[in-house]
Amino acid sequence: MPLRVPTEDVFAELGEDLFLDLTDEELEFFVEMAEEKMGSYETVMSYDPKPRLGGDENRTRNAGRRVTSEEDPHNAWVTQCFVGGDDGGDLDGWEIGIKDNVSVAGVEMTCGSYVVEGYVPNRDATVTTRLLEAGADIVGKTNMDDMAMTSTGHSAFGPVLHPDDDDYLAGGSSGGSAVAVARNQVDVAIGSDQGGSVRVPAAFCGIVGHKPTYGLVPYTGCIGIEHAIDHPGPMGPDVESVARTLTTIAGSNERDLRNHSTVPVEEYAEQLDGDVSELSIGVLEEGFDREGANEKILDTTRDAIDRLEAEGASVEEVSIPMHLDAKDIHDVCTSEGLLDAISGEGLGHGWKAWYNRSWIESFGKYRRAQSDDFPPRLKLLLLMGSYTNTEYHSRYYARAMNLVVDLTERYDAALEEYDLLAMPTAVTKPPEHQPERDQHQRLRESDIVHNATPFNRTGHPGVSVPAGEVDGLPVGLMLVSSRFDDATALNAAYALEQA
Image (cartoon, rainbow, N blue to C red; front, top):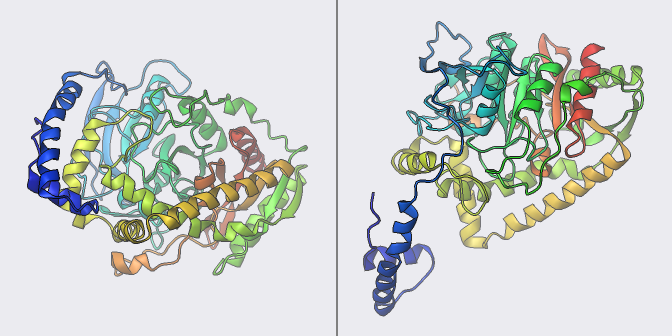
């Protein structure tokens, strides 16, 4: 669509939104100047940028179909498809499920929402390309919470049910990926984690989920909430599967320049020897000190830590009082961060990376036509972000982002003394499946991601590994290590798994 010269009326209306009291003379002048600037926009559109995200046309690609409830009683899938990986490679023949906010070229991507239902990416996400090049086959897009906005398992296409008990939900927002792994429908699944969305459903469903160090795995081609907290991560039945997948998808990416230097990558599976004899673990007191915590879950988590101590690890209590306030800090940051991403047509502006034009153009149209279909939590965050931005000039956002620096330093100080921090991934059982409750009622439900969320803000890696069961439902232990020391957290998880 050619760019039209704006009229004086258009500039006057835009000026009001920008707090500009423009005179008639100014409006006339700016319209004239805008007409002179048209050439710059024409220059930009005259180029045909080199494709940046794969989408190899030589691969076998079956765009797939929606999955029926009879085929999928837990509602773990949105679409079944088949994209064949290359021959050979470390994941040759593995079947992979991809969370439905990660692009697979030619396959519908809904983000679990009616708002963007029908959108079909024309390029693969970087993680998708890397999996295919490693020989994996993509067999479907997994269900997720509506626009990744909650942690319970509520998609626009119905709730994602717990794999062991239909009276409970799988958790979210990567609940479909967790269920697909737990039900042995895939070898590994990819999730995304903005506040616990890989680790929490992994804990609830009894599998392993890893949120890598921020920037270790490129987010290019994935749809997020806010650039500062978006992490893709592997989810698998065991630590080795997760570690092998992490090696495949990790690594710097010239199209995702949020990290300007080459990120250190290891052969993570080769580091899994289960030896924790020289490992020191700080048991985070505040990770257990939560109102409404299930005492059986706390005891089960401590029993798992005791098993690591029995394997030779040294274990001590450690206190970081600010951990109790980290979720509040995160929420204040997220309101205005999300406002920027949504008003920036689903990606935002000013970050150095490849911009997905197809997504930007489609999301811009969808949100203007169907924003009423956004989930209540997203609407609330947008309203609060707009309010604090307009009335208080980002004062609270700036203060909260500065507190993230303080929070990061406190975790770093503890991790200079200990190799790992340990705590429950979640201190409650999975959310109950209560179909009679509407979206607004569910918005009032207690939050379940207090322990997971802080490390999205600080960027530390964290893995959730099964620790036992309470009342027949799985419990997860979360192990957090220093940035880019993902191998240590994974090896400790492996030691617990073997024990």
